[in-house]
Image (cartoon, rainbow, N blue to C red; front, side, top):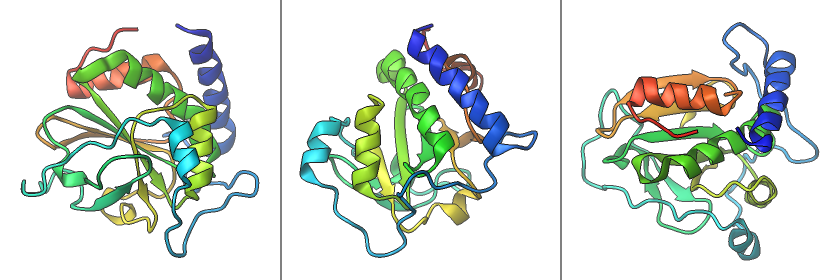
Length: 211
Protein backbone atom coordinates (compact mmCIF):
# COMPACT_ATOMS: atom_id res chain seq x y z
CA UNK A 1 0.00 0.00 0.00
CA UNK A 2 1.32 3.48 -0.86
CA UNK A 3 2.41 5.94 1.82
CA UNK A 4 -0.35 8.28 0.65
CA UNK A 5 -2.93 5.55 1.22
CA UNK A 6 -1.58 4.90 4.73
CA UNK A 7 -1.77 8.60 5.56
CA UNK A 8 -5.25 8.91 4.12
CA UNK A 9 -6.43 5.90 6.09
CA UNK A 10 -5.06 7.33 9.33
CA UNK A 11 -6.63 10.74 8.80
CA UNK A 12 -9.94 9.26 7.71
CA UNK A 13 -10.07 6.95 10.71
CA UNK A 14 -9.47 9.89 13.01
CA UNK A 15 -12.27 11.80 11.35
CA UNK A 16 -14.56 8.80 11.58
CA UNK A 17 -13.96 8.43 15.29
CA UNK A 18 -13.82 12.10 16.17
CA UNK A 19 -16.21 13.87 13.80
CA UNK A 20 -18.80 11.43 12.50
CA UNK A 21 -19.62 9.37 15.57
CA UNK A 22 -22.12 6.55 15.80
CA UNK A 23 -21.63 2.85 15.28
CA UNK A 24 -22.31 3.05 11.55
CA UNK A 25 -19.80 5.82 10.93
CA UNK A 26 -22.40 7.87 9.05
CA UNK A 27 -22.13 11.64 9.19
CA UNK A 28 -25.48 12.71 10.63
CA UNK A 29 -24.63 16.28 9.74
CA UNK A 30 -21.88 17.88 7.72
CA UNK A 31 -19.53 20.43 9.17
CA UNK A 32 -18.29 23.36 7.08
CA UNK A 33 -14.52 23.79 6.83
CA UNK A 34 -12.84 27.18 6.63
CA UNK A 35 -14.90 29.87 4.94
CA UNK A 36 -16.56 27.74 2.27
CA UNK A 37 -20.23 27.00 2.88
CA UNK A 38 -22.93 25.05 1.04
CA UNK A 39 -24.32 26.81 -2.00
CA UNK A 40 -28.07 27.35 -1.75
CA UNK A 41 -28.63 30.12 -4.32
CA UNK A 42 -28.34 30.08 -8.13
CA UNK A 43 -25.63 27.78 -9.50
CA UNK A 44 -22.26 29.45 -9.92
CA UNK A 45 -20.13 28.80 -12.97
CA UNK A 46 -16.96 26.77 -12.67
CA UNK A 47 -13.93 28.97 -13.50
CA UNK A 48 -12.35 27.79 -16.75
CA UNK A 49 -8.80 27.97 -15.39
CA UNK A 50 -9.71 25.77 -12.43
CA UNK A 51 -11.47 23.28 -14.70
CA UNK A 52 -8.29 23.05 -16.78
CA UNK A 53 -6.03 22.71 -13.72
CA UNK A 54 -8.14 19.94 -12.20
CA UNK A 55 -7.76 17.76 -15.33
CA UNK A 56 -10.83 15.72 -14.47
CA UNK A 57 -11.88 12.76 -16.57
CA UNK A 58 -14.69 13.86 -18.88
CA UNK A 59 -18.14 13.12 -17.53
CA UNK A 60 -19.58 9.97 -19.12
CA UNK A 61 -22.17 9.97 -21.87
CA UNK A 62 -25.36 8.49 -20.44
CA UNK A 63 -28.40 6.87 -22.02
CA UNK A 64 -31.26 9.40 -22.23
CA UNK A 65 -33.89 6.81 -23.08
CA UNK A 66 -33.30 3.76 -20.89
CA UNK A 67 -36.12 3.46 -18.30
CA UNK A 68 -35.21 4.35 -14.74
CA UNK A 69 -35.19 1.43 -12.31
CA UNK A 70 -37.14 1.41 -9.06
CA UNK A 71 -34.09 -0.18 -7.42
CA UNK A 72 -31.65 2.11 -9.21
CA UNK A 73 -30.40 5.68 -9.17
CA UNK A 74 -32.87 8.58 -9.34
CA UNK A 75 -33.84 9.97 -12.72
CA UNK A 76 -31.92 13.22 -12.27
CA UNK A 77 -29.64 14.93 -14.78
CA UNK A 78 -26.73 16.83 -13.23
CA UNK A 79 -24.22 19.21 -14.78
CA UNK A 80 -20.61 18.11 -15.10
CA UNK A 81 -18.18 19.73 -12.65
CA UNK A 82 -15.40 19.53 -15.24
CA UNK A 83 -15.67 18.89 -18.96
CA UNK A 84 -18.26 16.67 -20.56
CA UNK A 85 -22.02 16.42 -20.97
CA UNK A 86 -24.65 16.54 -18.24
CA UNK A 87 -25.06 13.13 -16.62
CA UNK A 88 -28.40 11.35 -16.27
CA UNK A 89 -27.90 9.25 -13.14
CA UNK A 90 -30.51 6.68 -14.14
CA UNK A 91 -28.72 6.29 -17.48
CA UNK A 92 -25.39 5.23 -15.97
CA UNK A 93 -25.39 1.66 -17.28
CA UNK A 94 -23.01 -0.88 -18.76
CA UNK A 95 -20.13 -0.61 -16.27
CA UNK A 96 -20.22 -1.21 -12.50
CA UNK A 97 -20.20 2.12 -10.73
CA UNK A 98 -18.88 3.61 -7.49
CA UNK A 99 -20.79 6.84 -6.89
CA UNK A 100 -19.46 9.06 -4.10
CA UNK A 101 -21.35 12.04 -2.65
CA UNK A 102 -18.97 14.68 -1.32
CA UNK A 103 -18.36 18.42 -0.89
CA UNK A 104 -15.31 20.59 -0.30
CA UNK A 105 -16.90 21.93 2.91
CA UNK A 106 -17.29 18.40 4.34
CA UNK A 107 -14.15 17.59 6.32
CA UNK A 108 -14.50 13.77 6.28
CA UNK A 109 -15.02 13.92 2.49
CA UNK A 110 -11.70 15.70 2.07
CA UNK A 111 -9.84 12.80 3.69
CA UNK A 112 -11.80 10.17 1.77
CA UNK A 113 -11.38 11.53 -1.77
CA UNK A 114 -7.85 10.14 -2.39
CA UNK A 115 -9.08 6.65 -1.44
CA UNK A 116 -11.63 6.90 -4.26
CA UNK A 117 -8.94 8.24 -6.61
CA UNK A 118 -6.67 5.27 -5.88
CA UNK A 119 -9.54 2.92 -6.67
CA UNK A 120 -10.27 4.69 -9.97
CA UNK A 121 -6.61 4.48 -10.99
CA UNK A 122 -6.28 0.79 -10.03
CA UNK A 123 -9.55 -0.51 -11.46
CA UNK A 124 -9.15 0.71 -15.03
CA UNK A 125 -12.07 0.20 -17.44
CA UNK A 126 -13.68 -2.55 -15.34
CA UNK A 127 -15.12 -0.02 -12.91
CA UNK A 128 -16.38 3.56 -13.17
CA UNK A 129 -15.91 6.07 -10.35
CA UNK A 130 -18.02 9.24 -10.37
CA UNK A 131 -18.41 11.90 -7.69
CA UNK A 132 -21.45 14.01 -6.89
CA UNK A 133 -20.39 17.38 -5.49
CA UNK A 134 -23.25 18.54 -3.27
CA UNK A 135 -24.29 22.19 -2.69
CA UNK A 136 -20.75 23.39 -3.19
CA UNK A 137 -18.85 26.32 -4.62
CA UNK A 138 -17.39 24.93 -7.87
CA UNK A 139 -14.16 26.85 -7.46
CA UNK A 140 -13.58 25.41 -4.00
CA UNK A 141 -14.48 21.94 -5.24
CA UNK A 142 -12.10 22.08 -8.20
CA UNK A 143 -9.28 23.51 -6.07
CA UNK A 144 -9.67 20.66 -3.59
CA UNK A 145 -9.59 18.03 -6.34
CA UNK A 146 -6.45 19.62 -7.78
CA UNK A 147 -4.72 19.79 -4.38
CA UNK A 148 -5.54 16.15 -3.55
CA UNK A 149 -4.65 14.80 -7.02
CA UNK A 150 -8.18 13.51 -7.62
CA UNK A 151 -9.10 13.33 -11.30
CA UNK A 152 -12.13 11.08 -11.76
CA UNK A 153 -15.29 12.71 -13.10
CA UNK A 154 -17.67 14.57 -10.81
CA UNK A 155 -21.08 16.12 -11.38
CA UNK A 156 -22.74 18.99 -9.51
CA UNK A 157 -25.81 18.62 -7.31
CA UNK A 158 -26.28 22.32 -6.59
CA UNK A 159 -29.82 21.95 -5.23
CA UNK A 160 -29.28 18.70 -3.27
CA UNK A 161 -31.73 16.95 -5.57
CA UNK A 162 -30.25 13.58 -4.63
CA UNK A 163 -31.05 13.99 -0.94
CA UNK A 164 -34.61 12.66 -0.92
CA UNK A 165 -34.27 9.80 -3.45
CA UNK A 166 -30.93 8.58 -2.06
CA UNK A 167 -32.03 9.25 1.54
CA UNK A 168 -28.85 10.86 2.74
CA UNK A 169 -28.67 13.01 5.85
CA UNK A 170 -24.94 13.69 5.87
CA UNK A 171 -21.82 13.32 3.77
CA UNK A 172 -19.88 11.44 2.61
CA UNK A 173 -21.93 8.59 1.20
CA UNK A 174 -20.90 5.99 -1.37
CA UNK A 175 -23.32 4.05 -3.57
CA UNK A 176 -22.31 0.90 -5.45
CA UNK A 177 -24.32 0.31 -8.63
CA UNK A 178 -24.10 -2.76 -10.85
CA UNK A 179 -23.81 -2.71 -14.63
CA UNK A 180 -27.59 -3.01 -15.04
CA UNK A 181 -28.19 0.11 -12.94
CA UNK A 182 -29.28 -1.60 -9.70
CA UNK A 183 -28.11 -0.10 -6.43
CA UNK A 184 -26.26 -3.00 -4.85
CA UNK A 185 -25.02 -1.36 -1.66
CA UNK A 186 -24.95 2.01 0.11
CA UNK A 187 -22.18 2.96 2.55
CA UNK A 188 -23.02 5.88 4.82
CA UNK A 189 -20.02 7.62 6.30
CA UNK A 190 -16.29 7.60 5.69
CA UNK A 191 -14.50 4.81 3.85
CA UNK A 192 -11.28 4.64 5.81
CA UNK A 193 -8.90 2.65 3.60
CA UNK A 194 -8.14 1.27 0.16
CA UNK A 195 -8.62 -2.23 1.53
CA UNK A 196 -12.10 -1.47 2.83
CA UNK A 197 -13.21 0.05 -0.46
CA UNK A 198 -11.78 -2.77 -2.59
CA UNK A 199 -13.48 -5.31 -0.34
CA UNK A 200 -16.86 -3.59 -0.73
CA UNK A 201 -16.46 -3.44 -4.51
CA UNK A 202 -15.51 -7.12 -4.69
CA UNK A 203 -18.34 -8.20 -2.40
CA UNK A 204 -21.18 -6.17 -3.87
CA UNK A 205 -20.16 -5.62 -7.50
CA UNK A 206 -18.02 -8.70 -8.11
CA UNK A 207 -15.18 -6.58 -9.48
CA UNK A 208 -11.68 -7.48 -8.25
CA UNK A 209 -9.43 -4.44 -7.92
CA UNK A 210 -5.65 -5.00 -7.69
CA UNK A 211 -3.83 -3.48 -4.73
